[in-house]
Amino acid sequence: MPLFKNAKFYTTVNHLKDLPDTPAEIAFVGRSNAGKSSAINTLTAHTRLAYVSKTPGRTQHINFFSLSNGHYMVDLPGYGYAQVPEAVRTHWVQLLGGYLQTRAQLIGLVLVMDARHPLKELDKQMLEFFASTGKPVHILLSKADKLSKNEQIKTLAAVRRALQPFAERQAVGVQLFSSLKKQGMEEVDAVVAAWFAQWEADGKRAGSRQRRRGYLKNEIAGN
Image (cartoon, rainbow, N blue to C red; front, side):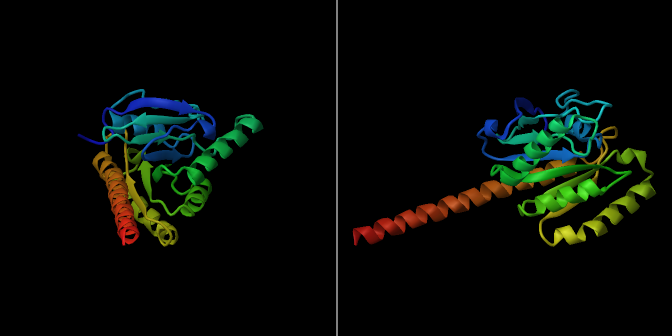
């Protein structure tokens, strides 16, 4: 079964102190109106799991969804939308920034960009901001159906070149995606599944090391 299919709403929070205790999670983020909510709905085969609006900035809280593998997907507020009160915008920045920098359960970030306008200044700032965590990023160039096949190829190649400086500090992938044509669904599913598999493998290795240390400690104490 695809990882995102049959995802279910879990909870929504508006303050970092209210974040739930989850095992591991991946998050979707992007500029307002970049196609993030449509991408989530397409991947999960739900028409209204994430709120889609022609008005940017409608995702205002951090929304959690449970996945088929027992882990979680997170829908983060969009960035770059200025037509809100200053206090609200400040709260969004603190909420988004605090989550991305401090959330231990976050193992990877899916960054959604409009394929017609990729790597805007705020997108680059987001990549720079998240790079300090060392966690992987996978970019979805959404609305790829708006481009011709030739334009898709050129755009993908150009973005890959532009990402090279970021790739020196963290794992950064990029692909074309279309909610309308359902293009790229299997690719992003495979990427995120690999993140969770790596997290689980790392956890098992850490557990083995901890058990080994406990065994040696008991052996030394016994002698």
